[in-house]
Length: 248
Image 1 (cartoon, rainbow, N blue to C red):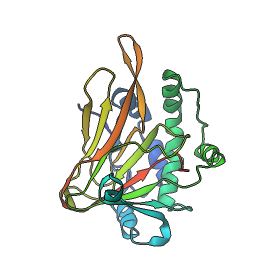
Image 2: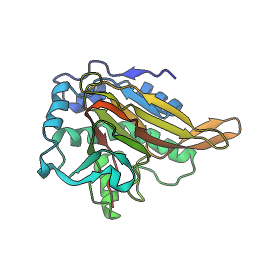
Image 3: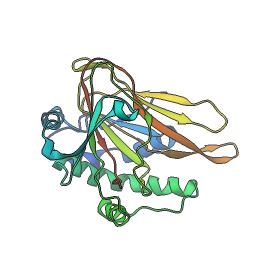
């Protein structure tokens, strides 16, 4: 299943907001509607990826560390950032969210979900925090040899924004082997469908958190989405996860 790769060469000295504005959002939204995911090439520069990696052991930046094997999530670990978020993470959240609001609201309408989302991310965070979802959810995931991430959904509470972003911080072939990003669709009365999303360092994939609408011969039906990472065969793999809702 071939998909358009957007944003080649965007990782320059321009700021995050400028890069995000330059993306072909019409095509991104088309891919999200068609496939449930869209890939952006070079959203972060190698320097920005390296800066995040160098701070992975800085405990002051994180609110918690999760060992995945202890919870049956797979193998590997991840750390949730604490507030205030690192500048690049905060800017990604702030700049990308408004580009996705229209499709998020349209998906909810198609699925007969009453909730609608405000135009700005700060307003949505205020809604989360009012409901007790106070803990930031952006995170960095670390995988070593034989590590993997089971198929899952990042929900965290009643208030869920239906799209999220993962950005690969390591370089395939140089830093690690294996560890492919995998998406699955569970379709009604049909077998599940899997998609492997190829990424290079700094590339981002935007994808459905929980479910998305798909138009069939009898109207719109709901497809449940899950994502994970296949077994790492060599090296270390780091990923930045940008989730727009906070956790309770």
